[in-house]
Amino acid sequence: MHADAERCVRAVQSKDARFDGWFYTAVTTTRIYCRPSCPVVPPKPENMSFYPSAAACQQAGFRACKRCRPDSSPGSPEWNQRADLVARAMRLIGDGVVDREGVPGLAGRLGYSTRQVERQLLAELGAGPLALARAQRAQTARLLIETTPMPMAEIAFAAGFASIRTFNDTVREVFALAPGDLRDRAPKAAGRPSAPGALSLRLPFRAPLNPDNLFGHLIATAVPGVEEWRDGAYRRTLRLPYGHGVVALTPAPDHVACRLSLTDMRDLTIAISRCRRMLDLDADPVAVDAQLSADPLLAPLVAKAPGRRVPRTVDEAEFAVRAVLGQQVSTAAARTHAARLVTAHGEPVDDPEGGLTHLFPAPEALAALDPEALALPRSRRTTLTTLVRHLADGSLRLGVESGWEEARARLTELPGFGPWTVEVIAMRALGDPDAFLPTDLGIRRAAQELGLPHTPAALTARAAAWRPWRAYAVQYLWATDAHPINHIPA
Image 1 (cartoon, rainbow, N blue to C red):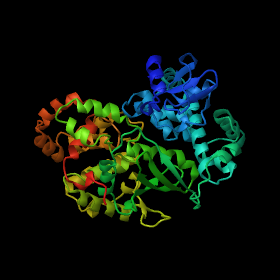
Image 2 (image 1 turned 180 degrees about the horizontal axis):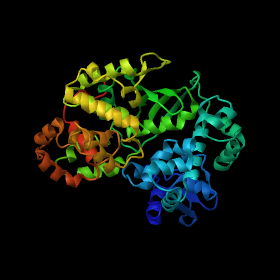
Image 3 (image 1 turned 30 degrees about the vertical axis):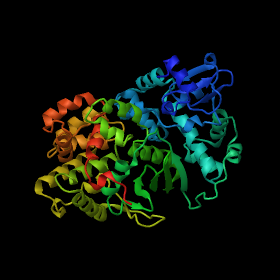
Image 4 (image 1 turned 90 degrees about the horizontal axis):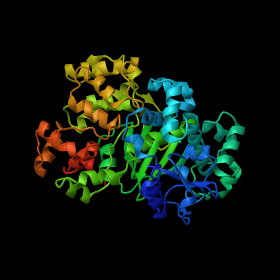
């Protein structure tokens, strides 16, 4: 979008928050870059330049606006609706791969050379992987400076900087303030968390957001010991590269409140990225709902509760295991099966607030389980043990770097993986916004009640008009039922 200057100028002049994250406005006279909804008086059009990323602005010598904080705007929805090289690279950078493995590690996961990856990112985003990772480190540093009492030296390394000098130079360059001055300007929060490794922050999103099915689904399918609903917050444990964490997420009208407790602050950026992905916070609900509302039979559902998101996951392998456990059984039965695996094979953790006890077991821990110990039909035991074996040995990779069609093909090759299981993994684990479940009983029942074709083939043909947002159509169709997944508990 940044290449369409006329459209960008209109968005800036109208202070349209829907475009936050789509592009950034750099003001050539002040050398400051802003989000489109910045509250200051818009600059003259001839003084505006537009960039596709905060990293590109920083690389061009612009510093972040102190009013609108463009570095903390929602991420571009482009990376959630595509599975090409650039989109997969952006998801990996958001997951901290460049900081942990460098650009060669990023390229290796994508199956391309470092030169190809850098060339593609520069062409589309105006910045290479190192610059994009640097911008992300600066944002993490700002968050820690403003929301925690951590010493600056600890913040530097927790944010991913190799040295304190680099940290200081980057903060000054990006925010035009020294780290200490940035902390002095931050509002003094009386309720700032005091527990080691704990902090509170806000997760922004593009309005509207309907939390009912989003949180309702996560709560109704919560695995005891790993997830819970407590005091108006969905809480769960997180398996992270440097340790583990516990997150509490509470929906609010203009943000999602997030409380994080981490054993290692280096995991902060990754934890935030995974929580945003689980809640689908970088989606563009206006574009989704406009497409679905064009169908006269879906339009009333969209108008009644706009802004539905696709409930996703923080761990793709975990969700694949849970999808197998949920084949042809009720939600309660699937939770029971998963809870047994957690008790037998999960890694115990300490929860500062109590209630959560384990991390969901990793594929390596499940690879050695005895099939006879599973209270499942023999065919499903085979499906589960085959899945965890392939996940553990790396022959099947489900992650943010996965190509959606390639992953579908690999899953289809496994015994017991039919269209429903493959598509629900594509929708909720891989994040494909066009995944569709025409064989799902709830979808077929909703289609019949609405007057849509309810046989899988006919419904798939009708749903072609909903592309590329069929996964969101699934949420609206599911919402016609009174099932607990569609409601947040009172």
